[in-house]
Image 1 (tube, rainbow, N blue to C red):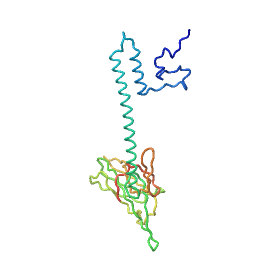
Image 2 (cartoon, rainbow, N blue to C red):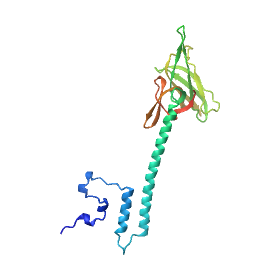
Image 3 (cartoon, rainbow, N blue to C red):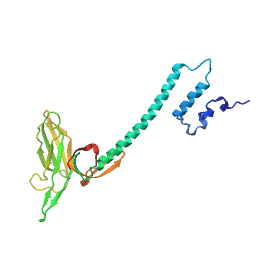
Image 4 (cartoon, rainbow, N blue to C red):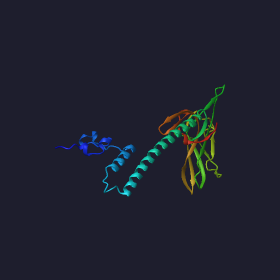
Length: 237
Protein backbone atom coordinates (compact mmCIF):
# COMPACT_ATOMS: atom_id res chain seq x y z
CA UNK A 1 0.00 0.00 0.00
CA UNK A 2 1.26 3.41 -0.96
CA UNK A 3 1.23 6.14 1.71
CA UNK A 4 0.48 9.69 0.60
CA UNK A 5 3.24 12.19 1.25
CA UNK A 6 0.68 14.84 2.23
CA UNK A 7 -0.72 12.57 4.94
CA UNK A 8 2.63 12.42 6.72
CA UNK A 9 3.60 16.04 6.20
CA UNK A 10 1.97 18.22 8.91
CA UNK A 11 2.80 21.38 6.95
CA UNK A 12 0.73 20.48 3.90
CA UNK A 13 -2.54 21.65 5.41
CA UNK A 14 -0.92 24.95 6.23
CA UNK A 15 0.12 25.54 2.66
CA UNK A 16 3.78 25.34 3.65
CA UNK A 17 4.78 22.03 2.15
CA UNK A 18 7.66 22.46 -0.27
CA UNK A 19 7.11 20.47 -3.49
CA UNK A 20 9.81 18.14 -4.82
CA UNK A 21 12.71 19.81 -6.59
CA UNK A 22 11.63 18.30 -9.90
CA UNK A 23 8.25 20.08 -9.71
CA UNK A 24 9.44 23.45 -8.41
CA UNK A 25 9.33 26.10 -11.13
CA UNK A 26 12.84 27.22 -11.88
CA UNK A 27 14.24 25.09 -9.04
CA UNK A 28 14.45 28.27 -6.90
CA UNK A 29 14.31 28.51 -3.10
CA UNK A 30 10.99 29.63 -1.61
CA UNK A 31 11.05 32.58 0.79
CA UNK A 32 9.72 32.48 4.36
CA UNK A 33 7.77 35.47 5.62
CA UNK A 34 6.67 36.22 9.19
CA UNK A 35 3.25 34.54 8.86
CA UNK A 36 4.85 31.36 7.52
CA UNK A 37 7.41 31.45 10.32
CA UNK A 38 4.65 31.58 12.97
CA UNK A 39 2.76 28.74 11.29
CA UNK A 40 5.89 26.60 11.29
CA UNK A 41 6.57 27.39 14.96
CA UNK A 42 2.98 26.57 15.99
CA UNK A 43 2.97 23.33 13.98
CA UNK A 44 6.27 22.34 15.56
CA UNK A 45 4.77 22.72 19.04
CA UNK A 46 1.65 20.76 18.08
CA UNK A 47 3.59 17.85 16.63
CA UNK A 48 6.46 17.57 19.11
CA UNK A 49 6.96 14.37 21.08
CA UNK A 50 5.61 14.97 24.63
CA UNK A 51 8.44 12.85 25.98
CA UNK A 52 11.02 14.95 24.11
CA UNK A 53 9.78 18.54 24.16
CA UNK A 54 11.61 21.27 22.28
CA UNK A 55 14.68 22.49 24.11
CA UNK A 56 14.12 25.89 25.76
CA UNK A 57 17.29 27.30 24.25
CA UNK A 58 16.11 26.31 20.78
CA UNK A 59 12.71 27.88 21.40
CA UNK A 60 14.30 31.14 22.55
CA UNK A 61 16.59 31.14 19.51
CA UNK A 62 13.60 30.69 17.19
CA UNK A 63 11.67 33.48 18.88
CA UNK A 64 14.74 35.71 18.61
CA UNK A 65 14.93 34.97 14.89
CA UNK A 66 11.27 35.89 14.51
CA UNK A 67 11.79 39.16 16.42
CA UNK A 68 14.78 40.01 14.24
CA UNK A 69 12.82 39.27 11.07
CA UNK A 70 9.94 41.45 12.22
CA UNK A 71 12.27 44.26 13.30
CA UNK A 72 14.15 44.26 9.98
CA UNK A 73 10.86 44.39 8.07
CA UNK A 74 9.63 47.35 10.13
CA UNK A 75 13.00 49.08 9.76
CA UNK A 76 12.91 48.69 5.98
CA UNK A 77 9.43 50.22 5.89
CA UNK A 78 10.52 53.14 8.08
CA UNK A 79 13.68 53.81 6.07
CA UNK A 80 11.71 53.74 2.81
CA UNK A 81 9.33 56.34 4.24
CA UNK A 82 12.23 58.55 5.34
CA UNK A 83 13.84 58.26 1.92
CA UNK A 84 10.66 59.29 0.11
CA UNK A 85 10.16 62.25 2.44
CA UNK A 86 13.79 63.34 2.06
CA UNK A 87 13.62 63.18 -1.75
CA UNK A 88 10.41 65.22 -1.78
CA UNK A 89 11.95 67.86 0.50
CA UNK A 90 15.06 68.04 -1.68
CA UNK A 91 12.99 68.55 -4.82
CA UNK A 92 10.97 71.33 -3.16
CA UNK A 93 14.15 72.97 -1.89
CA UNK A 94 15.76 72.78 -5.32
CA UNK A 95 12.65 74.17 -7.05
CA UNK A 96 12.86 77.31 -4.91
CA UNK A 97 16.29 78.03 -6.43
CA UNK A 98 15.07 78.35 -10.03
CA UNK A 99 15.98 81.77 -11.44
CA UNK A 100 18.50 82.49 -8.68
CA UNK A 101 22.22 83.10 -9.06
CA UNK A 102 24.45 80.84 -6.98
CA UNK A 103 28.03 79.80 -6.51
CA UNK A 104 28.36 76.12 -7.34
CA UNK A 105 31.17 73.60 -7.36
CA UNK A 106 32.77 73.52 -10.80
CA UNK A 107 35.38 75.04 -13.09
CA UNK A 108 33.31 76.36 -16.02
CA UNK A 109 31.25 79.57 -16.01
CA UNK A 110 29.22 81.42 -18.62
CA UNK A 111 29.98 85.11 -19.05
CA UNK A 112 27.20 87.33 -20.38
CA UNK A 113 27.56 90.65 -22.16
CA UNK A 114 25.29 93.64 -22.66
CA UNK A 115 25.08 95.63 -25.87
CA UNK A 116 24.86 99.43 -25.78
CA UNK A 117 23.04 101.68 -28.26
CA UNK A 118 26.29 102.47 -30.04
CA UNK A 119 26.88 98.76 -30.66
CA UNK A 120 29.62 98.33 -28.06
CA UNK A 121 29.44 95.39 -25.66
CA UNK A 122 30.22 95.23 -21.97
CA UNK A 123 31.06 91.90 -20.32
CA UNK A 124 29.17 90.94 -17.18
CA UNK A 125 32.22 89.44 -15.50
CA UNK A 126 32.30 86.24 -13.43
CA UNK A 127 32.18 85.66 -9.68
CA UNK A 128 33.96 82.63 -8.27
CA UNK A 129 35.53 81.10 -5.18
CA UNK A 130 38.37 78.74 -4.39
CA UNK A 131 39.28 76.37 -1.54
CA UNK A 132 42.44 77.38 0.29
CA UNK A 133 44.49 74.29 1.26
CA UNK A 134 46.06 74.19 4.72
CA UNK A 135 49.51 75.78 4.71
CA UNK A 136 49.01 77.64 1.41
CA UNK A 137 51.38 80.54 0.79
CA UNK A 138 50.29 81.58 -2.69
CA UNK A 139 47.16 81.11 -4.84
CA UNK A 140 46.64 81.92 -8.51
CA UNK A 141 43.49 81.57 -10.63
CA UNK A 142 43.84 81.24 -14.41
CA UNK A 143 41.05 81.87 -16.92
CA UNK A 144 41.00 80.14 -20.31
CA UNK A 145 38.55 80.41 -23.20
CA UNK A 146 36.83 77.60 -25.10
CA UNK A 147 39.93 77.24 -27.32
CA UNK A 148 42.18 76.67 -24.32
CA UNK A 149 43.89 80.06 -24.58
CA UNK A 150 44.74 81.87 -21.33
CA UNK A 151 42.84 85.15 -21.28
CA UNK A 152 43.49 86.27 -17.69
CA UNK A 153 45.33 85.33 -14.53
CA UNK A 154 45.11 86.80 -11.04
CA UNK A 155 46.54 86.23 -7.58
CA UNK A 156 44.15 85.50 -4.70
CA UNK A 157 45.16 87.05 -1.36
CA UNK A 158 45.99 84.53 1.37
CA UNK A 159 44.35 86.07 4.44
CA UNK A 160 43.12 83.11 6.45
CA UNK A 161 39.81 82.72 4.61
CA UNK A 162 39.24 79.05 3.79
CA UNK A 163 37.09 79.83 0.72
CA UNK A 164 37.72 83.38 -0.54
CA UNK A 165 35.74 84.75 -3.48
CA UNK A 166 37.23 86.38 -6.55
CA UNK A 167 35.90 88.26 -9.56
CA UNK A 168 36.94 88.43 -13.17
CA UNK A 169 35.72 91.59 -14.83
CA UNK A 170 35.70 90.06 -18.30
CA UNK A 171 38.86 91.87 -19.38
CA UNK A 172 41.53 89.99 -21.27
CA UNK A 173 45.23 90.31 -20.51
CA UNK A 174 45.59 93.06 -23.13
CA UNK A 175 42.73 95.05 -21.59
CA UNK A 176 40.15 94.30 -24.29
CA UNK A 177 36.70 92.93 -23.50
CA UNK A 178 36.25 89.18 -23.74
CA UNK A 179 33.32 87.87 -25.73
CA UNK A 180 30.30 86.22 -24.13
CA UNK A 181 30.64 82.46 -23.72
CA UNK A 182 31.99 79.69 -21.53
CA UNK A 183 35.29 80.14 -19.70
CA UNK A 184 37.24 77.69 -17.57
CA UNK A 185 38.90 78.47 -14.25
CA UNK A 186 41.81 76.61 -12.66
CA UNK A 187 43.36 77.34 -9.26
CA UNK A 188 46.96 76.56 -8.40
CA UNK A 189 48.22 76.79 -4.84
CA UNK A 190 51.72 76.71 -3.41
CA UNK A 191 51.94 74.54 -0.29
CA UNK A 192 55.29 73.81 1.29
CA UNK A 193 57.05 75.10 -1.80
CA UNK A 194 55.17 72.69 -4.09
CA UNK A 195 52.41 73.38 -6.61
CA UNK A 196 48.99 71.94 -5.82
CA UNK A 197 45.64 72.17 -7.63
CA UNK A 198 42.72 73.59 -5.65
CA UNK A 199 38.94 73.22 -5.99
CA UNK A 200 37.15 76.07 -7.76
CA UNK A 201 33.55 77.32 -7.58
CA UNK A 202 31.82 79.55 -10.13
CA UNK A 203 28.78 81.78 -10.32
CA UNK A 204 25.84 80.42 -12.31
CA UNK A 205 22.12 81.00 -12.84
CA UNK A 206 19.86 78.04 -12.02
CA UNK A 207 17.54 77.67 -15.02
CA UNK A 208 15.47 74.64 -14.04
CA UNK A 209 15.41 71.56 -11.82
CA UNK A 210 15.28 67.95 -12.94
CA UNK A 211 14.50 64.84 -10.89
CA UNK A 212 16.87 61.87 -11.18
CA UNK A 213 17.43 58.62 -9.29
CA UNK A 214 20.30 60.36 -7.48
CA UNK A 215 18.18 63.31 -6.35
CA UNK A 216 17.46 66.77 -7.78
CA UNK A 217 19.56 67.98 -10.71
CA UNK A 218 20.16 71.71 -11.13
CA UNK A 219 20.23 72.72 -14.80
CA UNK A 220 22.39 75.81 -15.20
CA UNK A 221 22.04 78.60 -17.75
CA UNK A 222 24.59 79.02 -20.52
CA UNK A 223 24.83 75.34 -21.35
CA UNK A 224 26.93 74.59 -18.27
CA UNK A 225 27.13 71.04 -16.90
CA UNK A 226 24.28 70.30 -14.45
CA UNK A 227 25.00 70.46 -10.73
CA UNK A 228 23.75 68.64 -7.65
CA UNK A 229 22.02 70.37 -4.77
CA UNK A 230 25.06 69.61 -2.59
CA UNK A 231 27.27 71.49 -5.09
CA UNK A 232 25.69 74.82 -4.13
CA UNK A 233 27.80 76.68 -1.55
CA UNK A 234 26.16 80.11 -1.70
CA UNK A 235 22.92 81.68 -2.97
CA UNK A 236 23.48 85.23 -4.21
CA UNK A 237 19.97 86.31 -5.23
